[in-house]
Image 1 (spheres, helix red, strand yellow):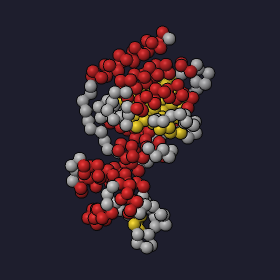
Image 2 (image 1 turned 120 degrees about the horizontal axis):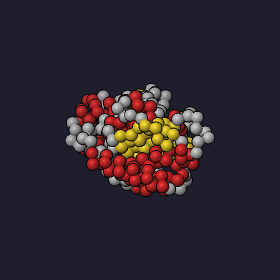
Image 3 (image 1 turned 90 degrees about the vertical axis):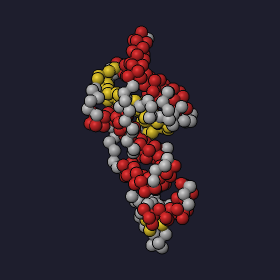
Image 4 (image 1 turned 180 degrees about the vertical axis):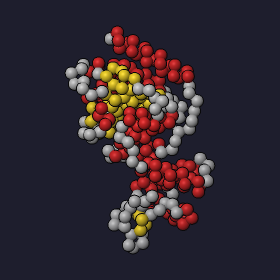
Amino acid sequence: MNNVSSSTAGLTIGDLAERTGVAPATLRMWETRHGFPEPARRDSGHRRYAESDVEAVREVVRRRDEGVRLDRAITLAVEQARAAAAPAPDSVFAELRRRHPHLQPQRLTKATLLALSWAIEDEFCARAERATIFGSFQDERFYAPAARRWEELARVSRAAFALAAGGPDPRAARVHHVPLAEDSPLRREWTVVCDSPDLPAVLAAWELPGQEDVPDRERIFEAVWGVDPRAVRDAARVCARIAADAGVDAARPVLFELADDPRPRPVDLATVSTLFNRVVAYVDRFGRG
């Protein structure tokens, strides 16, 4: 699991102990008995660890605190680290269509898509417990009108990420900005993800090409949405991986946590009905505006 070469400085065992709160003697004992964490060895024989080992050890500690046996906690942490390191797709919409074909796409105008986004933000992101939320806005100029709203959502979220081409707002204090590369598929997508144990929701849309002369609010997107925790988790993983690959440090522990599959839960019909009613209200409001 450790990718540190003998020629790379990496982290010493003291560094790892300081970053995780686990004593060096305990780390050595884990290595002897369980082969974890697995260090690289310099020519001198000194151990060196990768940054990924920090999150893996922290995950073992977290699971131990929850009452999981040490050997099982280590096995789960290693599996989680491997999943987090695996290559991920770079399109939320394509990943949902591939893994969740039951989510049937609908063609929506940008105005309707905005109404649906606001409904998810109000009924899910703002009310969920310890939610990790992601929003992709194509370009920074589209994020700017939503910046204040997302700063408020970030206040009640575990973490909030905004993905958009262009530079971040220097006044933003809580939202983690993720710059999108020139060739990123998300530059043509619109995404809202609320990954939480109680109120998961996802919206992903792809802008149809050839609309350069179409007024902004009339642009057409092909969209899917749902409240299936598995679909939400898959969308969140794509966003977190893109954020981590872009160098956003806050995304790395989030990506590690998202490697676990969510616990299944029954569909909350009352919540779905509330979301539907809110969407209708927003669409009606925008239509009259």
